Amino acid sequence: MSLRGVCHKFGDHIDTDVIIPARYLNTSDPAELARHCMEDADPGFAARVKKGDLMVAGANFGCGSSREHAPIAIKAAGVAVVVAEYFARIFYRNAFNMGLPILECPEAVKDAASGDTLSVDLSTGVIVNETKGRTYQAAPVPPFMQELLDAGGLMAYTMKTVGAGR
Amino acid sequence: MGMTITEKILAAHAGRDTVTPGELVTCKVDIALGNDITAPIAIREFQKAGARAVFDKGRVVLVPDHFAPNKDIASAQQTKIMREFARAQGITHYYEVGKMGVEHALLPEEGLALPGDVIIGADSHTCTYGALGAFSTGIGSTDLASTMITGTIWFKVPETMKFVFKGKKRNKWISGKDLILYTIGKIGVSGSLYRAMEFTGPMIDEATMDDRFALANMAVEAGAKNGIMRADQTTLDFINAQAVQPFHQWNARESDKDAKYHSVHEYNGDDIELQPAFPHLPENARPIGEAKGVKLDQVVIGSCTNGRYADLEVVAGILKGNKVADGLRMIIIPATQRIYKKAMDAGLFDVFIDAGAAVSTPTCGPCLGGHMGILAEGEKCLATTNRNFVGRMGHPKSEVYLASPAVAAASAVTGEITDPADVAGK
Image 1 (cartoon, helix red, strand yellow):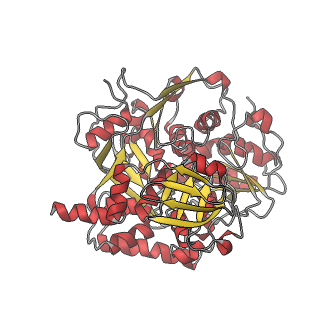
Image 2: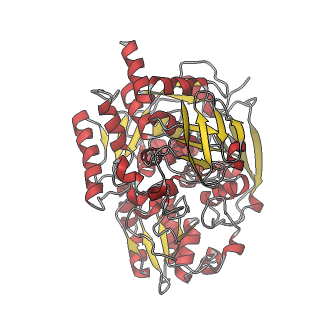
Image 3: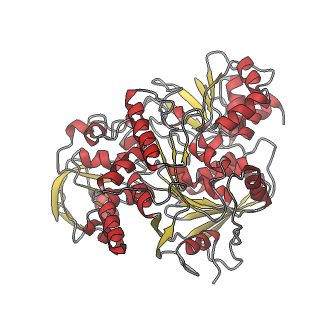
């Protein structure tokens, strides 16, 4: 699947408290969470981001709490894919489980700036920075994670497995 | 080839003789935990998938602790979802307000975390139970939903980093919190990403259970999958004192001599000073000498890291005969009802209240900026909690400094970051 959108660039160690501050965790409504996405790092982000845009960030994206509200907020804000140097462990799992596409590609992160137009092919992991005229290859999605994605997320995978076991 | 404790536990729960790092395994889960913030999403996913019953109503634990007692209408709705699910499913270990505590202090007290267990929780500080020799790790709500159905979860077997704490504490004020902040200061907030952290050495052997909990609790702040230590006599004494359920002897309580490690890190007690961590990352740990003098608006004692009885005892020892500094708010939150009652019976509340501190019912509360002590713009707080991210305790332009209970109590007396030796002697 090919995606094309505008890049919103963030730094290293973007934690889940920045992605969605805990003061908004008294709800799990995706639209409400999306309104406060990235609020403490970039208060204008939620209003500015357009459906299909991309988030690009540095090292250890999504560190901190296990709140799935973080990938939910990003996805509901309209972000189509997050490209980072690398992801924190729980965020990585959560993103695959609930169906937010993520890719690891340090080179693409290094070159990208906010406002660049990027296109991403999720099936091949090829990232093109159209503004800079450069092409990158993201780290391949591990086979098991691909299996989860193909099944339609963890719950679909689980119910398929449970069903098969009966 | 020998195995580490982490590998042994994962192998045993995957029905295998051995596992090696990098392998994917499906493990049986002994305890699956959720709270008032994460469980509602898991419950929604559970119901959306058409699941009818949890895999074992005695192995799913639900604790309303983050925003409970409910801080507002929306939070009340969230805890209601969890309460109704717990009733409908007949969940044995659901802890209502009045019985609940901060989850990672509560489960060990209730005898629900044991050596050799696999424990998953939709809360990142689930790694706390590694202090008891369990494999325990934080996961998200969808993972919790899946485990509530199947009783299993997949893991990539992590490589293990070994941390050896040699020698002795420099002085009596050094605590488990200082050891872990020192470690995170050395390796950084992603220094153990995806890996297991195994804590060993004479300083761990001598550490109390409460110090061990504080240490394992913050493994996730270095990015780790789990933190773990061997189960020794201190562990067994703790478990036998709490035991509310029969404890199956677990023989693999430590790593094999020829276990393979990703890396070995040796630290010496002489080098480890009191280690407050500056905003806005736990890796910004500094020796107390370089931290002294930062003026504070608030001090918080509590959380799954340092809200245990031994922590409160240290705080009371320093506060006794002293007063909280003018212009500073001190908030003390015992982590569980049992700790609360023990502290009250021991007269610690008299010390706290005479000193001018507020004492709260158990809750995660201010640790994650929920309630019971939110910061205004520009305010500085020193807390015994675990995260000092931007906006963690309130306004995005407020600051959180992390430290041990001893540093926190001494700082509350002077109004600025202070070495406890300067208030209460060496």
